[in-house]
Amino acid sequence: MSTTNNRRSFLKLSGLAGLGIATGGLVSFDAASKIEIPPNSGAPRFNMSGYAAPKIETVKIGFIGLGMRGPGAVKRMSYIQGVEIKALCDLRPKQAESAKKMLEGTAHDPKVYSGSETAWKNMIDTEDLDLVYICTPWDLHVPMAVYAMNAGRHVGVEVPAAKTIDECWELVETSEKTKVHCMMLENCCYDFFELLTLNMARQGYFGDIIHGEGAYIHDLVDLNFNKNGYENMWRLKENIGRDGNLYATHGLGPICQIMNVNRGDQMDYLTSLSSADFNMGKKAKILAAKDDFYTPFENANYRGNMNTTIIKTKNGRSMMMQHDVSSPRPYSRIHLISGSEGMARKYPTAQIAKGHSWISDAEFKEIEAKYTPEIVTKVGDLAKRVGGHGGMDFMMDWRLIDCLRNGLPLDQEVYDAALWSAITPLSEKSVANRSASVDVPDFTRGNWKSNAPVDISLTGGGTTNVLLGD
Image (cartoon, rainbow, N blue to C red; front, side):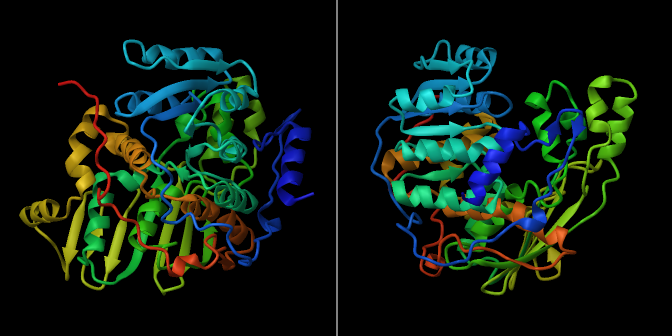
């Protein structure tokens, strides 16, 4: 039996579902030191990089998971031309019906699938869908994505796309076999400054890219310990017994696109280090003293508050990625680009530098006017009106639909979903081995040397309208 099947059998039999809960309290299953990294061998069945699937005039969508992220995605998609929302699925009937109610008065009348742990399979088997949009807890991402791809449906899956190296390979191999897209819904690649700096890099503003920094620094302690936050406290449980960069892709994705990772460059190896926990265990004890609900969490194996992961690429570039969701710090994804001729940094304020000095506000506006990409010119203002993290969620959804409708390659392919997600288990392995370096698998199996960089122009597309009244 494969490592993946062994793991899933263990989870099923123990009832842990990967969340660390067992009768009588919390247990941890630290697999970091046991991770086996598959060799970069063999040949891909089909190179999905640059692949343009057949055009779909009307993209029929089914949504799975209508808790934190799902309802917003449903609402955003209802504003995009050429979309039919065919089905909504959530284990909880109330959540599914609530999402359907949001669509009253629109052209969409989706069928609801709910009340069963296999309802999502029934939806995929029954409905004529082009795209399955997955917004469930992390453990369910790969089983749902693989099932949908094997049924011939394109997949959009929330971050991270996978939790283990085996799961990353499973996504890659299934997408190559079925020739359907698997796009990780990394919305931060579509934020305004990230798109601006990507286009600046494409136009040579920074010269040779030398170094990049990204992060997910976001104080989630109160939300993660909130009974009414994540269903069954699943997000809190992800922070128990796991020590590494658990949510790497928000900071990583935009930097990888700027560095042409998977398309001209490739990650080589990484090393990772974590602090101890100074906050989460303390919070759990305070809450347990007042509420027995938190007693099982009181003595849980909380791991590092701050993780720092450093990555070297085949072409000699470096990256630094950080993760901290439990310290009282201002939100930051850093987004720093350093090149041979200039640099940019987003947080705490967006700045661009040439030489030893930051450019002036007037010069910054000139840069924006010159380098703002077409997607922002076309739908940026509308995206801000629709919303979703300031509009980046909507631009991501619009771009996905426009590519599918016009038969264009996607900006983020299955190799990105696999590689960006793989940083978590690889960082766990490094942390567990005193920050030893760990080789990064090449999910393109050599095709990164010839794959073309991401094309953020609207050539061949840009025909999808936004159905938003004045």
